[in-house]
Image: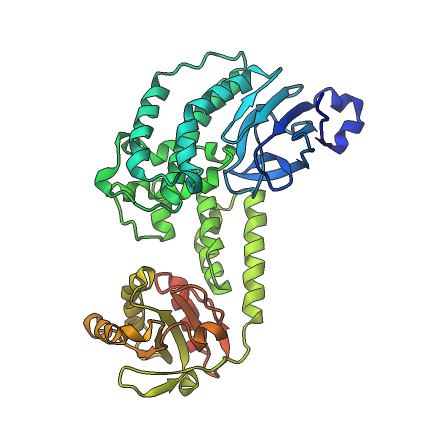
Length: 454
């Protein structure tokens, strides 16, 4: 008989609570990171409850008194990635017995009617999960995924799940299946692929996705990856040609979201991408009213604190750099003391860089007459020097344009690993931010205006 290696909870010391516990035992024969973890679902994400180290015989287990009846997750790896994780439904006194194999899991021994239904559903969705979630192994694209999706969607619509005798589970499980199908589909769209669909490629399943339907209540926050899939859900209308796929504004992301608590999650997603305390203050003033739960308030305060620390840490002297302009004249960052300097590190081959150019030109026009200088530094290689000059002319780029001949001093000095990178320096030549917002984000204009007034 295999030895069970348990993640023990302190609650087991109380006999009355032992009677209400969930007993989980299994084998994890797949490669893992050293631990198998039990997670609860918290605001659409996973939070670890306990960890158990599988023994030499691959056995692991947990004794756990569930805080609430509902879905929990067992798995390995980073909490916010869906690979190597499986959802199960627990209520008091349940038993779960399973074996995790190289590609899936199977239930063994005694299990609840709820988890037998969950296993049946998982096996239905497994072919899509392999393509959508485990993208590094399958190298799948929309070309092979979409036909399978339509086939399984039709199968799902025809499959009947008998009542388990637990009305609460049956109602929640119906919603879970809808979100689970959407989740594996969202993973296909939001993870790296070698080919990407156009609006004409989307199949009937996608056209059936109704954003308000999924956001009238907080069902997404009861799903293990609800927050993760919200981004794809928000973008779906635009992907289908009913919006601008390049519009990442909070207004665009909230469009179609009905529930105010879910709007709060969008505010938090937006806040997580901010670079400055000024940007946070502006966001909070306009949309802080949607931070309704204690969990949201705690997360928002964490972001606010880190941005405040970042703001107070700025002020050190800039490290100077010198490069030739379009006429071959050597120009240095230090030449512009007395002005606020926005540095744009970019290249002609960089799609996101070029995507920021219209916003950069607009910002430069809006700030005309203020003590702000726009300094663009290209990291194109020397062989593309003429291409760079031609691009400047054809796009009518303004400001001061410098050529760095590849990843040279500026990248080393400021630890630039990817572009576009925007940096802001004050009138005295001190650092305001070496990782400033992009021009497409109004946060940058707020920062420049604030510095220009000093």
